[in-house]
Image (tube, rainbow over all chains, first blue to last red; front, side, top):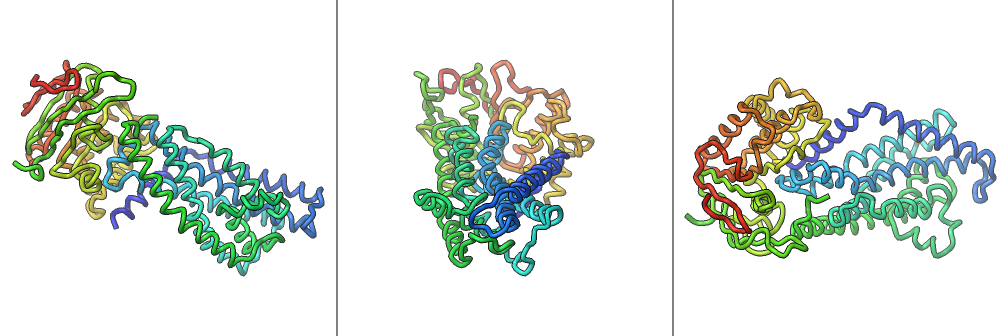
Length: 265
Length: 222
């Protein structure tokens, strides 16, 4: 029970810090609005093969835009660890009975939950301003699927956090991974248009099934894969990656402690 | 007295930093008995902070062992961490945009203190370190001395029976120094132990049970 309070305390800390920067939410909502507006007018101008109407492509890409925030939030975890190292607060987490691995896991909660809120806001803006039609009957199912998505994506951030603890840089390779996932994750276009070797890569990470599944539940745009198949994939990624990333993180901490570099930055 | 009854035993601890020809610590032995305060002085770079970090379980020695009431940092991690509280040198380690009371509550939660007692413990700590008037002020709006009081409050609040202090009087005024001495006396009275490190010229003005100096990787009686 006490570790649960520690998780909540770190979540509350991150919320407090976030709220202390008053313009951040407005800035991020405006970014979403501009992205949606851009793709709305692109969808009106360009005929996209595989989509019957501009509206169906717009529905497709709006879900992708909403998921971009989730992708970014997942890879902010290494930067958060680096911030703790620079601020000298990481040793406090490391020496606490709650422990460093649990603390890093808890530090990931706020950005992931926040990305969920921002994704929801993005969809609502698209509905209110551009007339996006959501499948209201299946929208509630998107909530547990999003939760599973966050569990499946969290380990990727944890693996890069482990790397940060070892090499001390905050964004080692994360920008490349985000760019790669944006291409192979089916965010802006269906995976089916990719060359076959890239389509294979699309199946090797959790982002593609997560995006397809949410798209199926929210807007049912063309190109969405079968839900049961995607759900199983997402589940298997979560089951495989969570223990792997936890192990990698604890090994990275031990490595830093053995070398004496654990709190260096 | 056996290891399980001894607050701290460092045995033949050795540490060499990469690229350095000499070890920073060379087979260091140090034992702290219950109810005692030990001071380790030494020149800048003598290895005092490394010694404290090893004692805290923050970094591992290349050779030798650390035991806190018989617990090893590598084998009894969670139990070890409940027994030790460490104040690093400097003014870092606080969340700039949290208030003093938020900072202390976070520490209490991370130390897995009894949730039903957290409010009372934090209130008591604010009073003990004369921080009541600053309770709702953000940390980045505090003076250096006030920040040091918050860091000390957080260190002593968790109730660990072994307290490791690296230059605890940094930026403190006379009243602040008195608060530190009082907090140390409380730990000693409860059967705990305190290890205080500071440069040679900053020997604490309180009753010491051991006064040592760290030179060339070894401890000597000061």
